[in-house]
Image 1 (cartoon, one colour):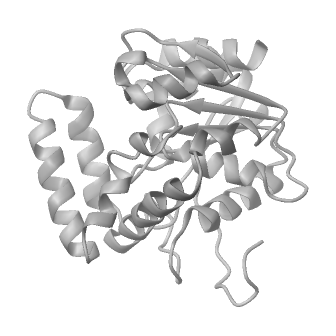
Image 2 (cartoon, rainbow, N blue to C red; image 1 turned 180 degrees about the vertical axis):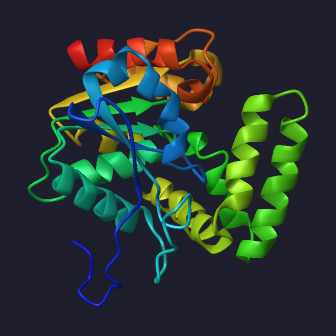
Image 3 (cartoon, rainbow, N blue to C red; image 1 turned 135 degrees about the vertical axis):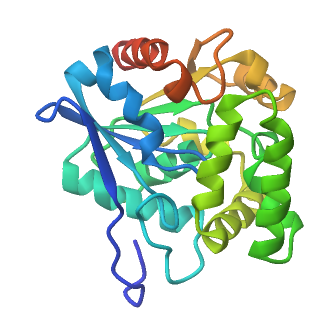
Length: 253
């Protein structure tokens, strides 16, 4: 668990959907925050469950982590939220899937179901976060990443929304986390960690959004997967009703 010398910290938790329902913890992708799951609160999923969108350190309303931010630290902080909320289901989007997996693997975790929404399976999935390792400072990475997103956002409101969240995030936090994603993904396959993170693991994805290397991993490994053909990467924002239906399917299967 977190080192005893580490500064005590509580992550900001956003609550949507049924207030008295069974809690589901949601972990956003790189540079985003728990507010990306707000629209799910007005869906069939929100009618049945309490949706907890958690802001990782340096994003949304959570302050930056005092020491170097790593996937392991993020996972342990999320595990504390899971413990406090007595949750048994966790959902991770993109690199948030790795954080969710690590939270589920902490000692005495109550998590029994991990749902990954286009989460990292191989190093090829870290096309945003992993690029942080190419820069020697948080400022340099922030400038380059925002410029990259500006180009992508020209014809994409989804990317424009994401770009705004990245711009508002703490530069050091996302740079440190991105550098760790690159290093961590070289040491093991993220998908291998995902499949051993809980009794029930489900993977939701659109093949068109998935690198060939990760499609090969899915083909070669036994994992229950649910396709979302035609869906965008930020489907919880852009297509919440479809996302809600698929998450309920993943919980039930």
